[in-house]
Length: 445
Image (cartoon, rainbow, N blue to C red; front, top):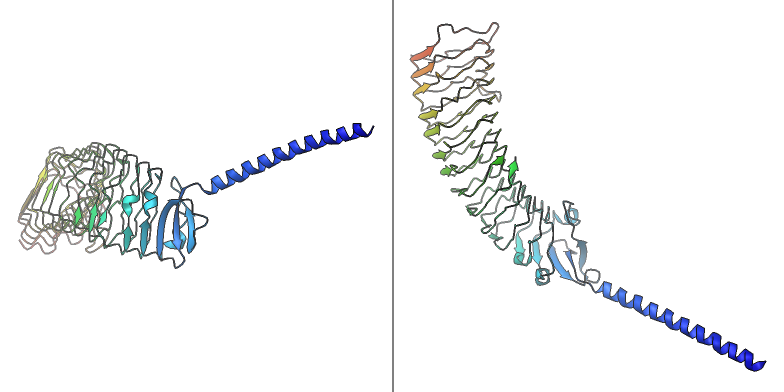
C-alpha cells in the first residue's frame, strides 16, 4: 500500500515538473520577445530639453534616450506631434547618421518644420531618404530665419503628390537646390515658393509636372522679389484650371518664356503677372484662353513691359477685364486677337488705367453689350475709369461699343490730356439713370 502511494506521488511530481518546465519555457519566450521588441530600431524625432535642437534618429533608443523628449513620426497628413512644442523655439534641426539607414524611409514630411520661426540651420539632411514620401506640403513653411543654402538635391520626389506651400514664407532663404526633382506625381504646387523674398537662385528646369491640376500652380512664385530668371520649359500645365497670382510681385523678373504652357483648361488668370515691375517681355502669345472667365489684373503694374502679343487670346468665356493692363506705364502696343471680343464681359473698370505710353488703341472689334461697369471713383479699390490717366493717348476707336447697359462711366476718359479723337457708333446710347460724372475731366484737347 505504501509503495502504491509512493508511486502516485512520483507520478504527480513528474506531471508537476513537466508543467513547471512548460511554464518556464513560456516565460522565457515572452521575456525574449519583450527584449527583442524593445531592441527594434525605429524612426523618431527628439527635442532637446532646452527645446532648441530637434534631432531625427533611427535606432533602438527612443525610450531610453535622455536629455529631451521623443516623438513618433506620423504618416499621411497628420500634424507632427512635436510641432506645438518645437515651432517657436527650435534653432537647429539635425538628421543623425542613423536616420540615413536604408531601412528607414518615411512616408510623410507634412508640416515637419512648419512655422519654425527661429530655425537657422539644418544639418545632415542628406540622411533623409524621401523615396516613399507622399506628402511634402508646408514642410518648411514659415521658416523665416532660415538663410543657409538649402541643398535638397538628394531628395527623391518620385512618389510625392503634394508640395503646397512647401517653402512658403521662407523670407530670408537665398539659395535653394532642388535640381533633379522630377515631380511626376505631384498634383499641386500652390504657393510652393510664395514670399521667398530673398530667393535669388532657383533651378527648376528639370521639373516635369504631368500631374499638376486644378489650382496647382496658383501663387506658386508670388512675392519671389529677388528672382531674375525662371526656366519653366518642362512644365506640363494641361490639367491646370487656375494660374492666378502665379508670378505676382516678382519684382525683378526680366523675361518670361511661357510658350510651352498649355492653358486650354485654365479658367482663372487673374493677377497672374501683377506687379512684375521689371518684366520687359512676356512670351504668352500661344496661350489658349477659350475657357478663361477672369483676366482681372492679369498685367496690372507691369511697368516695364512695352509690347504685349495676345494674338491667340480668346475672350469667349471672360466675364471681367477689370484692371487687366492698369499701370502698365511703358506699354506702347497691344496686339489683340479678333476673337478677343469681350462679348460676355460685364466689368471693364480700370482696364487701361494709367497706361501712360499708349498713343493709339483700336478696340473696334469689342462687343460690349453685356458690360455694366466702365467707371468708378479714383483711388478706390473698386476701380476707376476704363481709360483714365492714359496721358499720351491720342486716338481711340470704340466704333462698335454698345454702352446701353453700362451703369457707371465715371472718369472713363479723365486725365487723357492728349486725346483728340474717339470713334463711336452713330447709335451710341447711354443707360438710363447711369452715372457719367467727370467723363472728360482734364481732356485738354
